[in-house]
Every structure is written in structure tokens, then in C-alpha cells.
Image 1 (cartoon, helix red, strand yellow):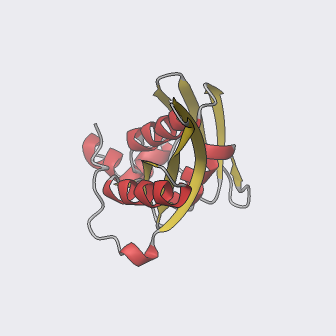
Image 2 (cartoon, helix red, strand yellow):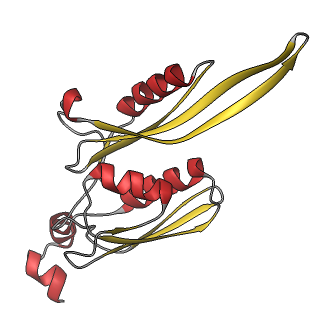
Length: 171
């Protein structure tokens, strides 16, 4: 496994949050229906730190607040190379399956819904991404995080192989 674990220092005020999905659940009780809400939220600083969280509550605002708190506890550092990802990678979680590829400068984030939220929150500006399999936002977000966690920075690869950085790119 790569060394992309907890980021060293992240300023809480720099984190931007994005609500990806809100789900309403109904519980039938004697007096009628009781509604509760779950919200999945992505937070990131735009410089390679991203996290996601799930919050559940009886009010939408409380669910979002809980989701933000949960996301701040699950932050990860991802490798970036010139505003894109270092190499192509596939991620999988349950039925969610995603493919992420680096793109040329100026391409933008070509990704759908939940993947776009994760990639933009992380600060990736140019990427090609495809979500295959489940369209459930929970599974897509977790599969995207899985793909980003499996990525390795070029300097890590060079160090592990014991070669110079240009040898990693040029063979």
C-alpha cells in the first residue's frame, strides 16, 4: 500500500465542503410517517487533501453538519502531478467501479456527479474519468477514493526502484 495516509497539517478554514447527495428515509409509526435524512459530503482543500463523510439526522442541516464533521476525520493526501493525476488507475468499492486517467492541461474535469465532487475538492483540474457499474453516490465516492489512494507519486516510484526521476517517465 502507498504512503498516502493522513495529511500533516490541514487548516480547517481552508477546507471547502460539497454536499453530494441527500437521501430521505421514512419510518412509519403509529402517528404517521417520521422522516430522517442522510447526507454524503465531500471536503477538500484544493491542494491534494480530500475526505468524505456520511451524516444522518432528523433535519437536513444537522445531517450535513454531521457529514462535514465525519469528512474532516477521514482526510487523505493524494499525489498530484501538474494539476492532474500521475497515472491511470482503476478503483472499486462494492458495485462501484471507476477509471481515472491523466489529461492534458486545459482539458478540465471530465467526470460525472460524485466523482467530479471528489476530484474538484482534491484540487485536480485536468482529468478524464469514467464511472462504470453502480451509480449509487456512496459507492462511486468510495471507489474514487480507492483509486486515488492506490496512486503513487513519480518520486516515490523512482525511490522504490532506485532510479532517477526522468528514467521513470522515459524508460
